[in-house]
Length: 379
Image 1 (cartoon, rainbow, N blue to C red):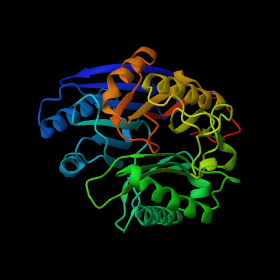
Image 2: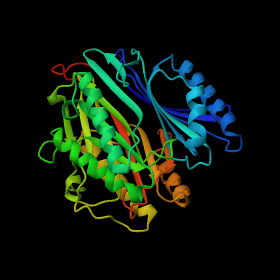
Image 3: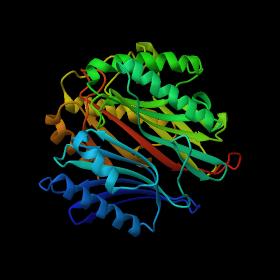
């Protein structure tokens, strides 16, 4: 059902988690890394794309449903990626430098039995059974300040969903907000998100959306906020529930932000857990272990583990992990901790400040687990 493998190519290495339950849709969660930081960006990009093509062939030709490039210098690199990669799926490019010293890394979410197609409103649709999975990447808006930009971004997305017969409240499962100079611009992102979510029926009395709000930037220096999204058309209310781990974490609304700690989505044959960006925090919302990267990492794992357990999963079911570090000097310590606990698990470590200065590390992940519930529609 679940397999892990690490595959080496010339100048690159792929960590692959595969979920195969014998149905049409097999999932491959891939983190693709370069192994030599010395070549120029152009040569590193060629190496990465060659490895991706070889991996895709080796896996039997699955389609990418979402791809994100983590790059060291978006202003000088994004155009080259767009010219070289025609992914046929939602594509995200974010300046969050890989901490292994290379200029880029790639997260690719791949599936068999599907064919992503662009929608007229700019999203990518992945249709299977009775669902349309709608992915969006690299959404930006130009306006004065992060609050105005985020307002435009979310309102544009609301209209995109409307064109697909969807809404944020009923269909959106996951968002990512990448914030340039997060220490100064995150407050505007939070204000805009809170205000618009309220108009969409997303409150602490209903529910919010799994999300990560993290430091990162795009190619355009004017862009203060960039957004990626995931929604599912056709999802039923009973298929979606939310994760709190209240004995470990507080509600995000306690300190004025509006996202869920995690979201569980159940289908007849599988369960998906979407775990939001999670840090070293306690049930009162306090930062724990100030200045201690090792202890913050351990507490962060404890929190993520509690969310996974509440959703009926464990770290064994985690398909990929994205790890954000505020201070690049902490990379060696954190990388060693992960290598000891999660050998071979697809993971990428990037330089990206968390939304509160006291947090040295944050991680997000997605888990996949087989289940058998004929009362639910198949994936």
